[in-house]
Image 1 (cartoon, helix red, strand yellow):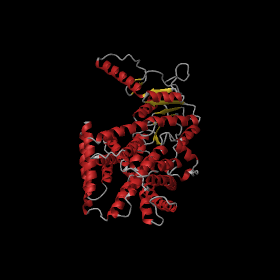
Image 2: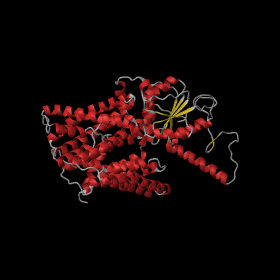
Image 3: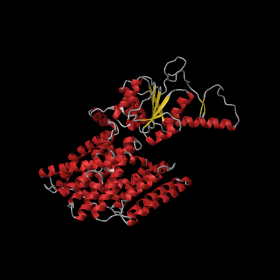
Image 4: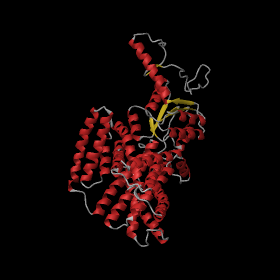
Length: 568
């Protein structure tokens, strides 16, 4: 308890300082770890176990949202292996040059060290990548699923490396892991029965740790990989999403310990700091460029390639594991553990700067990337065509679907929904919705919408406010002259949209309150067998009569003067 209190205090201060300067809290947690190491505070008992649990639960929740068919796509497994090989070769060359420049810890001609370090730094951090995707709500996007698939390929390569490094192959009992399948089938049946949130959380933790981590670790395979596999096997269950949301807070809390533990791994010397900084500076840009080149080779659009390249352009915590294994086996100096820990921490900071939510860096790079032949781009990644729709709904979650239904069914508008989550888009198509899989923050998409010259209304209902802001800016830049309606969840979000010039703004909870009141009134009248005062010829929606302005042709909801109504 005596060491836990300073850890909590310094970590909270680090997170708050990062928040105050508008940086992700994880940077503050990394800084807290280094500060604790500098102060000489010893890690409290159980810190590493909590950190490992956080990573395990994170991978389990990834599996709950991951479409396992992604691994079969060529741009995933082939691109992942191609990048790993190319990145290692480039890394060896860069390290050889640094050695000739007398960089500390690098000796000219020490090819074994060059190869091991370059291989370790060719991996990308699962933790950082998933954090970025979660903050953008992009886990289900094409670039998000592609990146996760490559991370899985890298995890498999990590298992092979550690097996070869230790000279200890997986146990013959590894074949018994097939028994995980019937266990998950039983778990799916249990999940269908339970309804209490605490049981859902407990069930998720149990599945991640027992048939996941423990079973794989027992046969000398990577336990985290086991948690990911079990999550994938449960992903198609209707309650998988609810389980993932229930585990979110638990996972986030434990991941704090992971970031703090990296910083607390050891206090670096000035030479260690210089070496780590040079590794980040000289290897990060080539790694990103290689990712973009590989993705373009596999016919992904420039924007998709850049998004995935920036996302994956960081160093993995696996580099620390490699240094630890290398020190144990005698082919790396023990100081490499501190150097690579510091390099990983630095790359985390750089990754948060390169993957800011506003995506301005992405647009800047895409504009300067060689153009592609549209006919040669993968069909999965081509720009969508809105056809002759006169209304677009961006974000087909609950709010977006409700808006789509209202416009299409009650107002008889020609509506198209745009959703960046592949799985959700396919489900909506199967349900009869006209939905396109696309990215509402893509400038090229809005240029195509403008050129169609038929869209009169755009409803921005994406769950992340910054995505709605960016889509609004692109609409204005493209010269869109129709009405733009925006859904917000907080008052400061509404103020930010007004500052941009938005007029039609709906506060989500305000709308929910109105809907709740309407339903309560109608239910009360029905219970009392009172006559509904609404005229019988008034149009009715799914939840009762529609009030307010009614449609007059294809324009915005208008009043008797036929002027655009102010729906703010």
